[in-house]
Length: 404
Image (cartoon, rainbow, N blue to C red; front, side):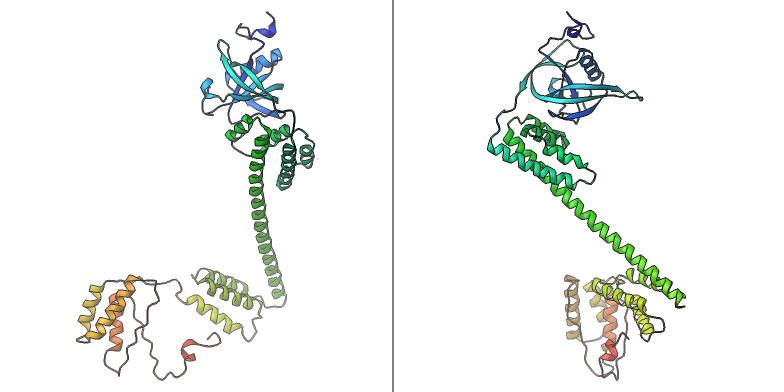
């Protein structure tokens, strides 16, 4: 019995078995060089034995990464045979191995009596002959890989050349699958796919999805950058405008007042179309000299817009019984008018957001038109406002003109 055939426990390790190293959330593919961090006692013992005896190891993915001491049932049956190039112990005590995957394998049966996992395995060989369909899929996968590398912000320039230099379709699929940002279970499914055609198709599908995500990410970054550049440009222009006004002696406190006016407009609760128009007029005011003819008129109009109660609405009380009591207490008779008012209030209660008709009371002075309006306001819990329009003959005096 030689030293290469004996584990540290003194039990001989047959030549036809493979030392196994369970890993969490990591799939090693053939042809790929990866650093692997190890920390569990059995895994460390397996790595030390493989380095001491020069044997290869087999990496198997755990089904549940939270299991600290995995048994046979906790491991997938298909893994990758790898050779250990380096075994490093870091200053903090952690251990790392640099491995290179070589070939797929399937576990036949586990062997007992060793301080780490050991199993008899069978090698899974890839098809040696590539068809025209496989070559076409390989070329398509190289094209997708080049596009993905171009979209990656920090990808080295030589990476695209390295991918193009891979000739074997299986190695190409495994290399791309190893670096894809997908779940470990999806990588395990790719590892278990030995046939080239379905493996190339699946890798191309996953890579195409990743490309779409990268495109959308780049588009969002460009939009964000453009918005930031536009705001920076606007701030620079405002600063230059303020300096010009200061040189012309037109600075004063106008800049602060306009800034306060802008803030007041933004917080006044204006509808979107009205806010857009108000901001447009505010920009005109900012460009307008204080001695301009329209300056004071435009400023007064904007201040009036701010003072209007755009977002201040009193809550209405839709209690028809209370409204009937108020109308009966305030007015004698007028049954048809009271009935019409209650119908109006009922429709308003059923559809508060609807655009209902406007009640219009017509009659000579003293018949109760104003008091009916007061009763309606009291029944709804709203404040009553009376505007006398006696002698008005032009609607422009009510609606206003030229921002008055």
